[in-house]
Length: 515
Image 1: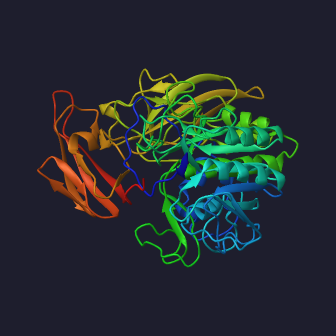
Image 2: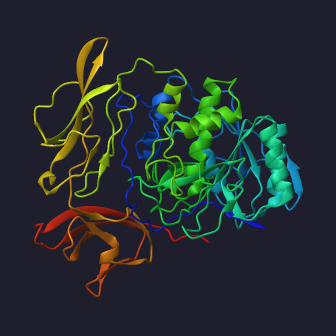
Image 3: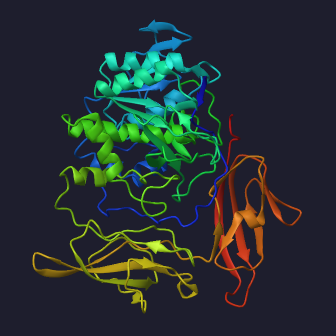
């Protein structure tokens, strides 16, 4: 079987129906360790709350094997990058300078363990973990299961606690199954990409092996990209669209995908490859903080604390949900005295139900939703521009036309140490009645208005281009002609129930999928 990379440079994204909304689970933020230039572009670090546990763990003393296309060189990785090995078509080369010919393995390694606090580039999820780069993919991104099996065994022998497999194919040979079993028997956690062949594709392996932790991807709005696969084998979800990370120094940097500093060896990539790297970094954080935990225990705490963002309970799109590092560390006994607030998705859309979470709070005695005039963070102080919403005293709330243009909060009354206290969630974004179904599309895509524009109203959709590399075709479709950012105003015509609805949206036009 031929293995292929589990990443795309870009892919069209689809809306997620009946998605369980989600927001930052805890309001307390921990500053980044340093002033890495690209830190602000790293939305993935923040959405899984990795930065919030760096005061406890940065992944020190944990070895993560990246079985991929090689890793490096890149100055942001040099401190954490150990000597690599190349295993191509059964030929093994030790101790050679590790050079990644295509950039994929370097990107994965940077997500896991790029150095923090060094005034350049980005910060990895586990910025003090060590990377063992094992190259099994050739310059075209192809490889064989036999080489992956050898790489897994080699990683175990070198002392890796985590093995990252951002690759996959159809079916599985006995040598690969045996190698994964060997790793598990040696107390090593094997994490694999769930695949990028779309929702109707067959199960990807080795992610489909029950012994691996299978990871799928989400975009910035907690949506499921159309490149992601579906299936009961998927365990958890992590960020996988527009992820900024390292590439090999000296590589040509496409300006449309550059991140951190222009011209520097950092670009954005998308795919379950990237999502898998996030989870490998999370595993390193846990193992560093709790070195006696077994690989199985680490796996279980990652799955058990994931935030449910799909259908209630485990589902075939998101698995158990979005990895939540803060929730993991709280479950492990850290941050026990932190103040907690109710949480939910920051996205406010008319007719799209919001489901709040108060599980981290003491027993809640009363709930109340509020309509507010301005955005705000979670607080224990009564906001002065919020008005309670009648008959909105449940965990679930569906925004109505009355909420258009406002921001929503949930207030909770709890008793702590015998003293009643009120806790208010952070607000949603401004509530809109019409929005884009996706945050990104491939360059060259032509998308019909009815596919692109979603709304609470059934009024006819329309669209106006404000700026960017997109144009209208036949008064009914949008053509995304070049890589870049497209700003547009989407509308839906007035109906009996709704007035004309308008909203401004920003679409990323990203590089075409590499098959």
